[in-house]
Image 1 (cartoon, rainbow, N blue to C red):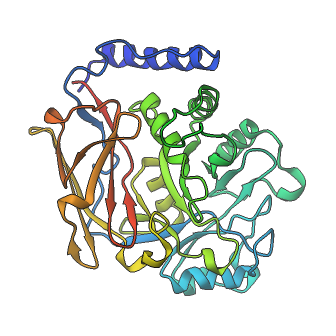
Image 2 (cartoon, rainbow, N blue to C red; image 1 turned 90 degrees about the vertical axis):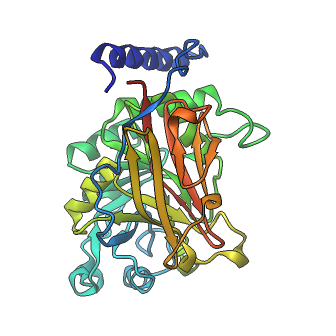
Length: 366
């Protein structure tokens, strides 16, 4: 593992980068900072039991308790019918909880209900695993820093909802870099709040595709010391939104505490059909990850996945690093032979009907 001194130096470089960026001074990391051979120093899947059931969850859902078109019971039934067994009803500034008050018993349905809401009096933020604050409609703050802090103090987790609504890409989204002020804003939120665990990378019908660019920019600047976990959520407001996205949890148990722990540690992956033309979208053809293995001796990272029980082929997998660039393809990547690796590495697996994402692996120098 990297020495304590080298880790401190890397952290100071990144923190200095944040301070300068926040002040409007754009700097690059030192020459040679990425020159040495990279190894995996943060592997969120290291202790995952891939033989366990893969629980399917959505954490951004609206009902007639806010601006959704369906009653809570109908929304719950809709997700149950599509085999989701983890669900948060996140009405705007209102905790739609407990489910029994709306005519549904999660235990009878075999589902894990997650209490939460979408705090909407500032840049929207998902408050999960807590009923903070109650009654929300009367007492929620209009300051996102306060919300994030208070949710964490109540034992909950925070996830940024569709951040792409609040920052604008350049003239060529995906090509132009994330604006300095936007990057500094979100780096400040993540560095400032341990209870902010991640952000939506896919939202609803993929309304803000440039959020993948933001995610990669944040990973580039903050990994491996500060991971930012990615989510794909339906942000459902009606029946036609249910089932576009999913977060997958390979765990023996899917109780509330188990799912919260998995999110905190990044022990999940996520998928979407919205990367495909509507006529090709097919939930049944979502790639399901069956194993992730890091061979420290060989310095190789290998991923296995299936689509409808058939293993994916090497050309279906690509590896992303260096601010969103494809650095390798195939089910296995040799870090010692791969050019362009920086602070993180993540994988995307594409089928004919959907796309699946891993969480980021943190890279460092041993």
